[in-house]
Amino acid sequence: MLRRLTMLGGAAIAAVLLAVPAQAAPVIDFQTGTAGVGGTISWDGTNLIGNNIPIGQMNVSDADQNNGGFVVSGLVSAQNGTNAYGDLDFNTGANGDNFITITGCIAGMGIGTLNSAGQCVAPVVLMSGSFTDWQAGPRGLIAGVGPDTKNQLLLDAIGFDADLPWEFFGFSVVTPQTAMIPGGPPGTVVSTDIVNAPIPEPATMMLLGTGLLAAFRARRRQA
Image (tube, rainbow, N blue to C red; front, side, top):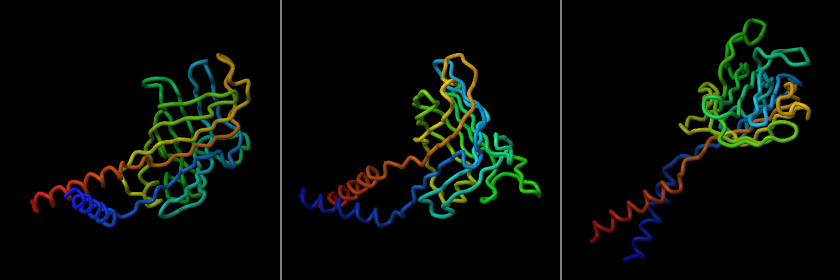
């Protein structure tokens, strides 16, 4: 009987696996791109605060569509002075002071409002979240993890329709070492890289439970 139950459970799990369509697991990477140096980061010995940090590039990989690099524009200027870029702001503090946001326009995906010259005049929130863990180093924020949400137009553009939370798991904001003196003047950000991806559902456990339930019902019918 146990052998039959095991076989029925395996068959049910296989059937469910075949019935569930595969969902791509895209990775979105926000970077400095061509923006160059800009924005500020400050360290009070406990928390890091970043303001008006330019984001000029978004890379998409492993998505159903629109993989590749896209220019991020916005209202933030950088030292190269040629364009205006997306805006990264964050605070690693506790409670209401713990947040991260990236705002801007992505013309290549039709996100945000641009004028006739192609300039972003009404940026939108591309990503927002909070820190659950982070690590500071001698040259800025070298690691960060936390949940975030994405702009729906961005998700539509990459063909990702699953209602799953996202998480940023790679974080690097590099600044001159003098900016990491507690209470010292804010430092200028040299480069930024934020990698994030959707948090997968516990699909394996769900499928296992479904398979075992089907096997149990079949066993009762045959009893």
